[in-house]
Image (tube, rainbow, N blue to C red; front, side):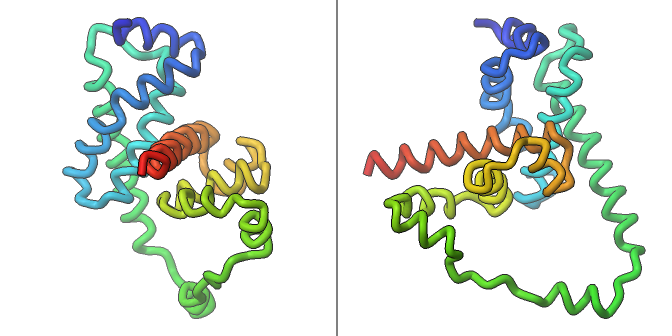
Length: 185
């Protein structure tokens, strides 16, 4: 199937078309942003935001242009917005209380839920989840262990709903790859 056919399907809400487009262009957008930002976390956040915005506005896509060019243009704008936000954040006042909170370190001991899951022979799954980046671990945990809805996750993370959907889709894809790699050994 041609890319334009997937785009048309995505315009009509076809989830498998969104997944195909995400898989097809993720590496290209991520690599571009990694070169620009020289920071893997920023590049990944920008890429997630890019796909989120692209999927929200896919009906506005003009087929006269290459889809990857459109995605890169969105990524550049997201990057500019991130830089502006950071410049603005540099001038925020931080109280001593806020400063002290920044030094509190979370306890890394397994929680009661972790112990229960381990007892139920899901320790292997947890090991795989722990190989994910913290942001992906968090959405997996909120969705599948705390059983929150997409809207509840968006509220908890104070992120747009579309970001949560893209992040969860990417987390599931990466987790599946980790599990497949583990079963092949």
